[in-house]
Image (cartoon, rainbow, N blue to C red):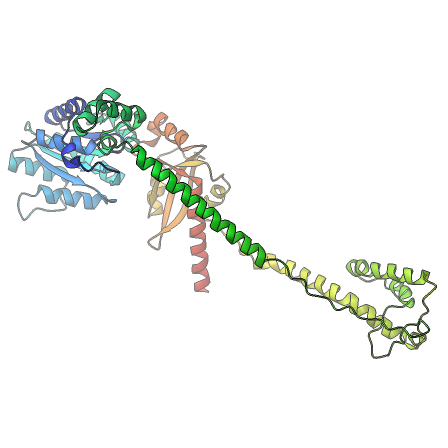
Length: 487
């Protein structure tokens, strides 16, 4: 819960000494030279707050502020900047960014600062266009006025880009990290924001928060739980659990009661015996039991399938038992039945087993014929064999395969770590370029930091083989459905 007595908007005006020092350093860098500056840190550490105060300190400059909410294309970013820099209604939206900046500086006689929050949404081509615009402006500018771009984002995004650009000659890039607060800084901040808290209560809260979460956003919305409310929540939770268990037990008991098997009584045929303890004579229209002559018939049927012979073995054992009994006399009318009837009686037992065997064989033979084979155009087959828990580095996605080949050519021609697979985006082919195979995402990111020249002008990020496999499978199903619709 949030303490309603604290003015949250006013609490954001609390400025720490470490923030003031960082603002002064960035302002000085913007006044002295033309640079692309990365302001980065974890979410909630106060990057946007520092950027707002920086604009106030650079009131003499023309500040263009943009806060991105979704991915922006390079051409869209360029046109939006030029619209902010226009000096008349006849401004050409297709002119270079550096030319538009130069005209704006000449018109307003002010330096230009472009502040872009959530800069992770800018594609690499857009960042490259901004970086080149700064260099082009530095080449043609003859005044002491400057052009700077401040990109605000997460450290995992900003740090690789900065390292890749700073190795260039005359790179004109800089970075500023917004660190988390120390316990003393956090205590001072809490005393300014939560004036109604006691010193003991503030110290108790600060000690419980891990060091990596000592950030202004966490401290502004901080509140220790009330003991009475905590006890009430515990009792409420226990009551809910007991109610749930009671309902679950009732449901299980009802299910077991309704799922008990019902055994229907089996009608046992009664055998009638006459006064002389002899069996009832069998009529010719009744189903005939197997007699002793069946043994000869079974032995003579050596060509029957093995399944049929196994089915007849218990019948043969039963016949042997009947032969050993001397107390039961065989009915006299059985001798009137010819061998053809005996063969039919035996065939009726063998036939279902033989038929089922043939049907199962036909089904098993038909199964492989109905399975469709998938033909992959790239490295999908190799990627599907890799464990889903591993990671690869995604170098980029391309709508044109020629663009992918152009990026791929920057690597060694025999680099086996490069893999390509195809997906579908907006009903059109989309080609993805991967690099390497790593056990964890941390290992993948560390590889990028240790091999920055390999990924020049790129911003690779770790992607799990779980998501790669899902994308390949979805694309395969879409292609198969398209083939079925065409057929």
